[in-house]
Structure formats: C-alpha cells, structure tokens
Length: 231
Length: 96
Image (cartoon, rainbow over all chains, first blue to last red; front, top):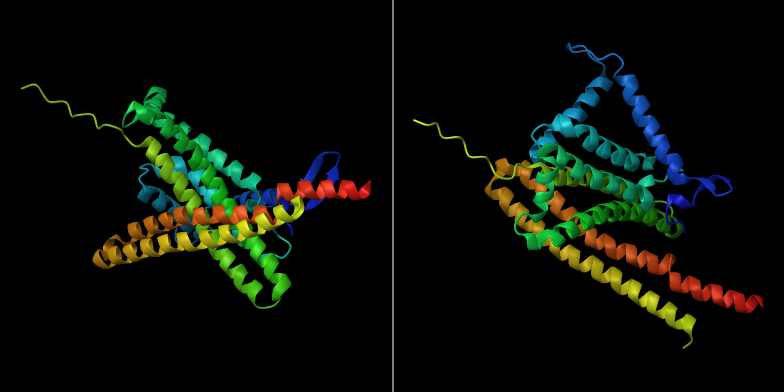
C-alpha cells in the first residue's frame, strides 16, 4: 500500500533518489512554464485573439478579483505568489486523470515546502507594507500578553496548511487504491471524480488562506487622523 | 497477551475509533455552518459571493480536523512505528 509518491523510485544512485514526487513536480513546472511562455509569445490587445490567450486572461482576472475581494488592495503585487500557488496545486490535482500519475502534493514534503513558502511570504509582505518595527509590533496587537499566542498561531497555521493539503490529496489517492482491490470498475471512477473536485477546492482554499494571512499582515493598523487645518 | 497482540489490538481499535469520531463531529459542525450560510444567503442574496467564499474557507477549516483524524488512522494502520518495532524484534528472534 503506497502511502505517497515518495516511494515510487525511478532512478537511484547511492543516496540520490529520483522519486515520483520530484519527477512529477518538475513535470508540472515544465508544463506551466512552457505553456505560459508559448501562449504569451504574441499577445494581442484587439478583438482578435487566440483562445489560449482568452483562457489565460480569464484565469488571471479571476484570481485578481478574488485577491481583491479578500482585502488586498493592489492585487498585482501579490498575484505572482498567490496565482502560482493556486495554479500549481490545481494542475497537480487536475492531472490525476493521466494514468500512472500521482499528485506530488500527496507527499508531505511538497505540501510542507508550499506551507513554508507562505510562512516566509507573510512576514515579507508585512514588512514591505509596515516596515520591520511596525510588523513586529503587530504581534503584540491587542496586548503584550498575546505575544506567545500570536507566535504559536503563526506556526500552527503553517502546519495546518501543510497537513490539510497533504491529507486531502493522500486520502484521494488512497481511497482509489483501496477501492481498486474491492470493486474494480465503477467506484474508482466515481472516487476519481470526487478527488478532482476536492483537489480543486483544496487548491482554492490554500491560495485563499494564504491571501487572508497576507491581508491580515498588511492591513493598515490605525488610520492616521487627518490633519486639522489651522484656522 | 504478549506485546505483539497488545499493540495490534490497540492500534486497530484506536484507528477505528479515531476515524469514527473524526467523521461524525466535523460533519455535525459542517452541517450547522452550511445551514447558517443558507439562512444568510436567503436573507441577503446580493452578498452571495462573500458568503459563499467565507463558507468554503470555514468548511475547509472544519474539514482539516477530520483530515488530521484520517492521517492518524492511516499512520496507525500502515506506518505504525510500534508495530514495525515488534515485527523487527520478532524477525530477529526467528532469524537467530
């Protein structure tokens, strides 16, 4: 019973292993990078445009609108990070249709890496918005007593992000594996469809949660009172 | 009961209990949250985008506790360190 794509070894030399997680992650990155490069080679701004450009525009404007709804006012600053998160996790879930493919997010190492990226990005965006002192002061936000709780909540949020995505992806793959040994023909297909749905929802949840954490770190603390003109 | 039997029984029973509790309690919570979200949608249909998004984020939060229970059950059944330890010991004894 294979618990994760870490155990699919394609090539091994000493302690260097090329396992399923690495191969599928690099495959996804290749598809995303090469696909976007090919589509954006000749962008057109008039009414005649290729359908792939239309698709990309729908995706990008959709993500921008979602980021703005969450409360981040200049979505173009954050869409690079948040959009990439969403597209990677969504494509990883979508490619489950391809036989022989295991989503790399079904391995705790991939999801831990993604969660660590969010863990590093939130203070980076917060410091960029508020300055180092302002951001560190936000940890003592209601009172100084809340400092350890705020720090613990930062760490536990990151852990929850990683385990949530890992659990959802791994459970999808495992249910299909178990059902294949019990009822081979109908239920694995149904469970694959359910796995696709939960994969898309989890991709959306991951990026929306990252956006919410960044919004919480970059919101303006106290509005500066407007200067009263001296009459 | 020797060590192996004890560990096996404890792992199996705990895995079953973990999965059952992990399925029941988050389901109750999610049911309540969806019911409240539907009431809010009926009262304010034009806020449906915000309500739907908040509903999904809340459901994902609740779902993650169910996923924690599932992960623990899977570890108990498939990657149980105590079981691996006693199996390794038993294999060493048989091999001697």
